[in-house]
Length: 96
Image (spheres, rainbow, N blue to C red):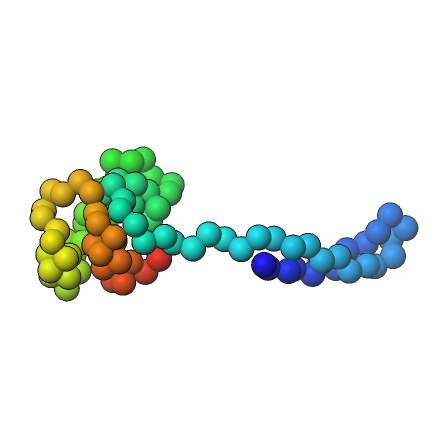
């Protein structure tokens, strides 16, 4: 739980402190993802095809990531990423 404190003025222009509680953001779940689905988590502002292309470029740019994915059973052009492959992407690229 995240608690934020705000300095604000009430209706009579007297300063007061408020605190609001916000639920914590969801953490990244390691599970089977479609390639485009995972790409959209990393690039939420892009169109699905562009997000997939960007993730593909990032993977191709990183030979250690390619090696880790291949060791986890990844084949070029694979449309689904297993939890182990998803973990490798997260390990090299960080959480989305």
